[in-house]
Structures are given as structure tokens and as C-alpha cells.
Length: 303
Image 1 (cartoon, rainbow, N blue to C red):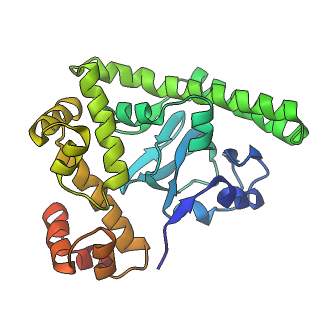
Image 2: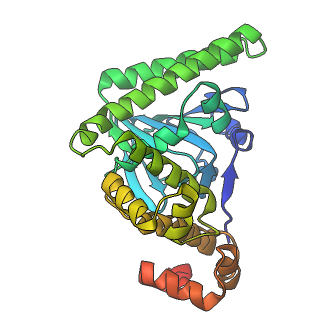
């Protein structure tokens, strides 16, 4: 059975064997190009999880991306933003015509260039429809120029301190522009949503951070409310007001996504999955999973 890969920049460097358009000057970021005639990259078709961000810009051609078991289609002039620790895979690439860039960025790099991952995660909550954004031709051209220049610098002067600093500035500028592309669309969505007060938004941010870290041990809303020094009722209210979903819904989504991943790809049996997710026994886990998905863990494993 396939196992999930925790993606690190150095782990995916092996794609260099598949494409000459591979650019890396540090273990904190990596850019490579998908182009016509290249060898299929099996690594992409397995579930991957990155402690950082991934940007996929499809200039021409088409591909499919599965993010947290939800499938999306990318084609000409589209940008896909994958936020930290999301489970994803890229498949159904049309290798006869594909022209795309994939930019991998570690959390360390994003922190170094003062990009607030918590803010990105919170804003992405409002982007309920899709992580795929359609770019204008000018926006696509700008992104392409950024990465072409980065590739030239990496190829010519990879060992130069000045080149490394130039590349770092170029990549960070590219990331800021990519986020601008994505959030300029998102702002139009947010304008249609009544925005919570700053203090409420802080609670939403802190709640999501806690769930992200603790969902495998704690599933009760009361636990998270206690950590935030507010009542479960108030926490549920502000989470629903800000995201359109209850606090329990968010906790359950994290747990179910991890359960699906472990059942399908970890090689663990159902009992081991139940214990990994802090259920008292396999029966309790089975009832929880079936209530939320409509099928038993074993049925899902066979599906």
C-alpha cells in the first residue's frame, strides 16, 4: 500500500532527473517547470504534505490537483494555491502540451520574508469555492518572467552569496505578487461577507491554529474554548459568523481528512488508525467515521 510522504524541499530534488528546468539555491525553496515531452513524474501522483506552501501556475495545457481529497482542474492561465500541511497530489498531466511552473516554499522561508501563514490560513477560510484562480495573460506573463529570471540566476551563479541574496529577493517578490493575485479576487468575496471585529478574527486565527496542532488528540469544542478562555457557546458563534461553519465542523473536518489519509495510505489497520486519532477503541472510531462520511472505515478502505 502507498504511504503518505511528508514533503521536504530536499526530498523532491530528485525531479531534477525528469526535467532540465529545475531551480534551487537553498533547501528553503524550489522551483521547477513542467514542459512538453518530459518524463511523467510519479512522485506527484502520490499524496504529499508540505510544511509550507505550493503554488502551481498552469500557463498552457491541463492537469488535475486533489487537495484534501477534493479534485480541481487547472488549465490555461490558472493559479492553484496550496496552503500549509494540506494533503495534495497532482495527476492527469497532459505531457504533450503542459507548460506550468510549480513553486515549493518552506515555512522557514515564508517566515524569513515576513509572510504570516496564520493570516493566509484565515483568509483562505473565506475562499470557500476553490483554491484555483484564473489569471489574466499579463499576470501569467509576469509570474513566468519572475521564475525564468530565477532559473537563470540559479544556473549561472549558484555559489555566489550575491546571487543567493538576489534569488531570495526575487522569490519573495514573486510570492508577494502571487498572493496579491489570489487575494485580490478573495477581497471581492470578503466584501460580500460581514467581517467580524478584530478581536473575533483573532479568536478565529487562534482556534484554527489550535485545531491544526491538536485535532489528533482533542475533538471537543470545550477543549479549544478553554484554551482561548471563552465559553464553548461563544467560540461556536464567532467561528460560525466568520466562516459559515461551526467549530465542531472544522474539528471534524481535520479529523476525517486525517482518518481518510491514514486508512488509504498509511498501511495501518483500522484499529491502529483509531488509536492514532486518540479514539478509545475501533468501535468508537467506526461509529464516528460512519456518522460523518456515510460509510464504515473498512468500506472506505475498499472504495
